[in-house]
Length: 171
Image (cartoon, rainbow, N blue to C red):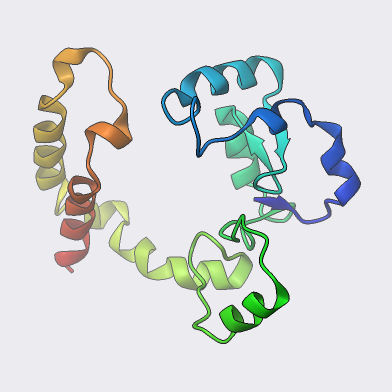
């Protein structure tokens, strides 16, 4: 998310943890939790030069940003973190334009979201609720006795998609 009226000078206000934030290499890959715990205490919102964006580490801050699309935009959230030459950008522009729920705002976002709103409406989910509970219970059984879980690690993507596909298949 990018604040609509942000400026380059704004980005120089929080360089502390932003310089240390390297999520694609160790130690962050092996243990991202230590860094985020520290960030929530010391600098819950910081600028990341790597992503050219602010990183929010507290739930309430994230929710506030998501609820304020007038100030914060998703339009550039999927931009590459690699600095490419103008020639590369020109070639990429000639490809297909990729617009999704994640990197759209306003009316375009509403239009893309509309089909999902119908399928995932509460009255529609009642038809597949038992099936989703069955999938969730089966998945949780694999690690419930551990006392804790890393959702991404413990719930493989194909299992999460299974619930979603059941929701869209019934209508």
